[in-house]
Length: 126
Image (tube, rainbow, N blue to C red):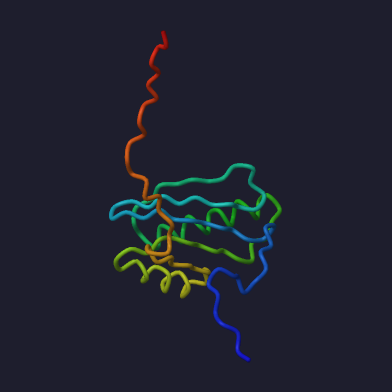
């Protein structure tokens, strides 16, 4: 019996001491990159130009910072919402040894409650 593919399950166990986990908020001009980096108390957040080599340079810098903190990074995993033609970045990152997850926009839950909250009005009771 064959097992069905489940994209929500990782094929490798997460070892936080040697894995950088990064997420990207993409726009046409800039990308906002946040990460969990082993050995760092802070959670880095960096705005960069929308440029794949700049992203790779940033990930390598964070790998070096983890190394200076005594953690050898063996795995870098990146996730982002791939709108439009955003799947090219996942292919590019994988070609450079980075684990990449392009998430289709329709699979990201969105709150449909877009109405502005109504103010609570109290009426005096006499």
